[in-house]
Length: 555
Image 1 (cartoon, rainbow, N blue to C red):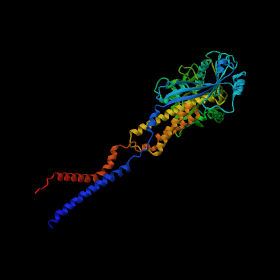
Image 2: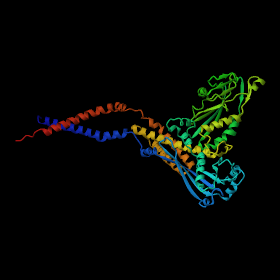
Image 3: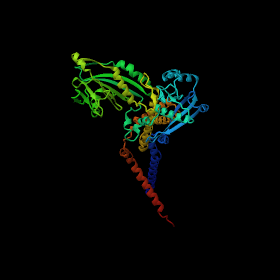
Image 4: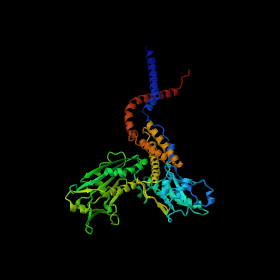
């Protein structure tokens, strides 16, 4: 029995060592990989290289221009050279990381018989009516007709004409450099009808550095899939004024045709309301010379905030809201006029606020008070009101008066209040704006996900990112090909997908989860198990190392 005791002890020691090694092997070989796999943050792959390449994207905006030459518009030798194509390209000088080039592709050809007949008529309006084709031109394309230098189609003092559709007329010249001279005139007209530096600067105002001219360009609304328009009648003194306005008829006759023509740029919804006892919040000043009250330009920004709290239209809206307010001043402050910065009364007695809407002050005729008892019945002249609101609506959408070349006759808008090429110009600007917004959003998202490694990237988020990158590239290709309609649709898809990925709720789940909380969770779990295993391994290592150094006994 004395011999069996040490042998049993040695056997137990060997078993203990084997058990410690087994537990350590299981913890290292199985436990750690299993824990690492089950607790790792899932991150789907993203096209980081393609996203970084979007910052160096060069936009080429191609405008197809068909130039039609009539007989005697250029010398006979030049007419024999037709047809051919000339390309005019220039870079838009903007302080933006994305380089933008405008490319006018002019396809020269001779006029057909029916075009010759139409352009020989007595007035340009008759010619336009005869040139109307059953099939409309493609979005973004232009047609310029070159007429004889002595043609009576235009007034003799006019060198060019811009029509309400995608057509223009330019006088020819009998000169050996006729094509060069006429080509410069055509480019000036085409730029006024499509792309200018001001149009693109207004579209990229939120992406350009602050300076004296970009601040003025921040008036138009940002691009969106939809817009909500609210017309409000403010009657602060219902005891004195019984105001009636035919807003439904006015919207149907004046606003809806304009919005229908603008439907390619987004969806629109229109509503109206009447607010009683709604004050402007600013006390007007009395002018004893004219016995009237006035609001100067410095007080106008303080008018909006008190009124906006009563509107209640933008709180539950998913889209930008445009507010148009018709204010009938109370009897104690009538008549009320708005003054400009020079102290002169504003002709329309209205003002607008960028990306918010407009306010018009509607004064009641003073003769009404003499013939009636209070409250007096006030019937609003909706024609005068809608002229002001439509003009403000055009400005808020960035549809400003074009800078036409010298001696250029500009046509009046169509009955819808919008020229066809003005819509094209808006789509050009919106496409560029959408691409800039999508590129900025994708770049910010890639930087955020690269900086914070514990954010989960789900497959649906990754698919939205891939879809946005593909849409940006497709829109840029369509713009370079001159396909404006498909380019605008692709740019909208790029913005929608990029923002859907950026604001996905799953990206915020672990965004503010610091590392010290991880250690506070895992240390109580792993420390009681890891300490005995580590101590056993250290003990086994020391004993093994000691046994190797122990000298062997020799006889």
